[in-house]
Length: 462
Image 1: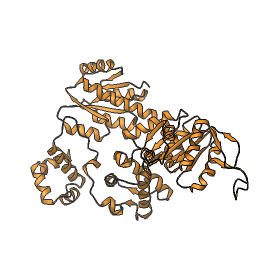
Image 2 (image 1 turned 135 degrees about the vertical axis):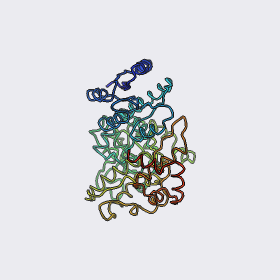
Image 3 (image 1 turned 60 degrees about the horizontal axis):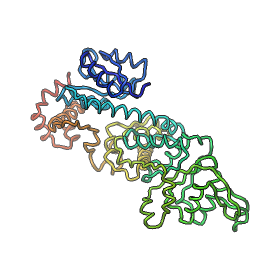
Image 4 (image 1 turned 180 degrees about the vertical axis):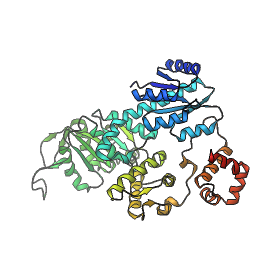
């Protein structure tokens, strides 16, 4: 498919033609449909990265079309056009999975910005899809799953880095998935049929680390009863992953620098050098720049390692990914624990989003596994969640509320929240009040304020 193809769906022929001309001017290949069914027929025969649809159309509405596209063509991003001031319809569209929305009358400069942003996002998703498939197949990409812009950017750079032999430095807090990303780079590279060898520089005693890395000759020290190849030799023509590179002793940093620069190593007890061809990927959670200032890490080695630097974001910086992460981990781990009948209610997901996860994905995985092991019955309940998740009620951020650029009515948001809470509990005021963490008297006052007693029931029946 053409990566800049966009399908316009609007029953207004003149507006549709104006949009076609505007989008063609910014280099888009434009397709057009006058109705939802016509658009679905076109999507059935060809892949289109972005659809732009009016919400109000005769027959199939734009919201219905959005729902069908989201279900049948999940790889397609949908932009919706709504009348000015109808924030409720825009919020409904975003809740159904719309990528973004525009309001009438159209600002054509804004149209170009929104469409370009959607196309760029789709290109980014496409570029990392192959890398994601590799991780899914080999190493469970659910550990670093997500669609947040920060993560997608890292995966985009990683996918391109995989095609080179340049050294890569992966930075990120403990538990963010640095080793998984390193494996993905290897398996997506020309070295994928050769070894991927890992050594944790902080887990091996300093006096043993040199022989582990570079190997030794028989008789080079007490206990060296035979020749032993080091991790570097084992990784020859493949990839060497140096985890926690910040823990590498300074005396070995010189030898690693020589390996990177000249492709040679000196075995312990050997008199001649050994030529090797390895691609180096290093990872650390430490601040190497500060270590350089303290003379604990060589600056020349740092520059050799950081040809391509990838910064994996902590989980607290991509909270939008947490619900999908929880659900994927839940499916994987309940199968491992042979509890396939266990269910996790989606209403519990905001509690996961409200926690900062200092241990990142690793901590999240541990919590999900503990839930699966300890939950009695066939459904995870609020009481089953750890105390630290239940300590605070979910905040507004956990609702994934997108704020429109032109502003929003606070009273409108409050009215919508109260209405949804009442409908959630079939207009049981006591349950709705507990859910909103307010008194029943306060709820009744606000229902009267917004006229929700009668109007709400009409709304529910409609």
